[in-house]
Length: 289
Image (tube, rainbow, N blue to C red; front, side, top):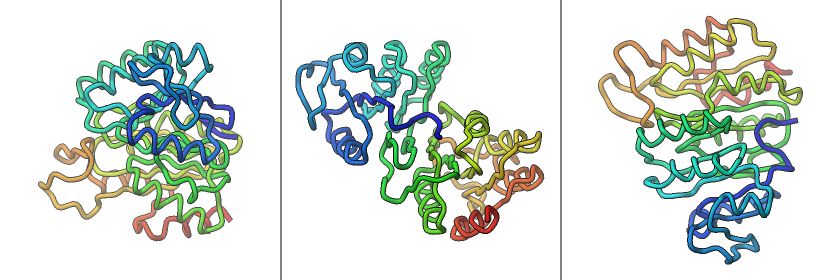
């Protein structure tokens, strides 16, 4: 089983004719994902990698039945691209684009929420259900099918944790990079609930970082009674006070958002906290076995 994407997902790539969109679409196709359409205004009728290009997402959906949109659109237009996909009836929008203005994303998120469209990102690596479907830029070869769900605010740390889990002889059910911006789509709490209902997920890994209160909210869900083992890591424990670093969403306000407070909340909730990143895979494997 899986959440968000599977072998039947039909993907439209917004920005397919661009260099980045073309490169990653090729990798997705090689992985076995069903990339059924591309969208670039003014380039309808072309074909890229054997994939037809349409002028709008509505045209692409009508012709191919696409239900997932992957966005490689420049930052100035990416929020509008997400809204276009939602208006066309696409069920899941994955926004890879970074540096999108916060006000743009506030408006876009409200638009998508009003229509019941799920969003992952922006500024994220995407979603992968190993062995079935890859929607994004993550390296497919480090993933293997299994029962560990992974959710991370950091793309790079997603890859590191997934690689360790694979090396430890375990696999992943679905891996999601939720992005590190102040305004994002699906968050830790929402994904914990989706993993709760997924019979193919036996445990969940949460990869957090300094700033905000997403990890504390996730800890509250686990503390209230979560039926599956949860593992947690928070990046930024050694971040020097007063320094601006990390993602745009990694903002510490007074005593709020500090790594030590997040780790304390996780431990109090019964989450298995891993303080040394290099020990993640071995810790998960030892606990689950």
